[in-house]
Length: 64
Image (cartoon, rainbow, N blue to C red; front, top):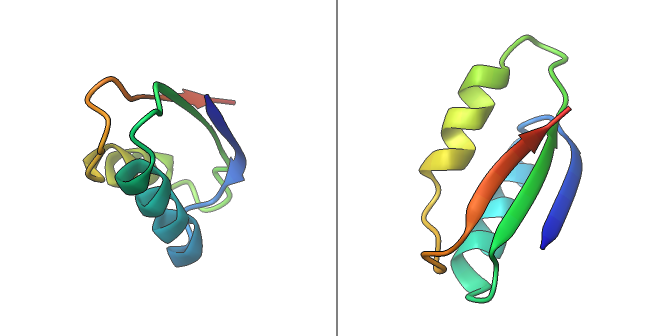
């Protein structure tokens, strides 16, 4: 399980998530704590869910 806290949706954060999801075949669960500073959490969630995943078993969960 990978846990990411206080994700605001910056380019660097999305790039890091793209790396995790695209390179780590063993991922089953990724928990993401979303910071909604600009009230754009729906867009952030959509962006994260649209990233390609190497593991077909990987489930992204949003917390907070």
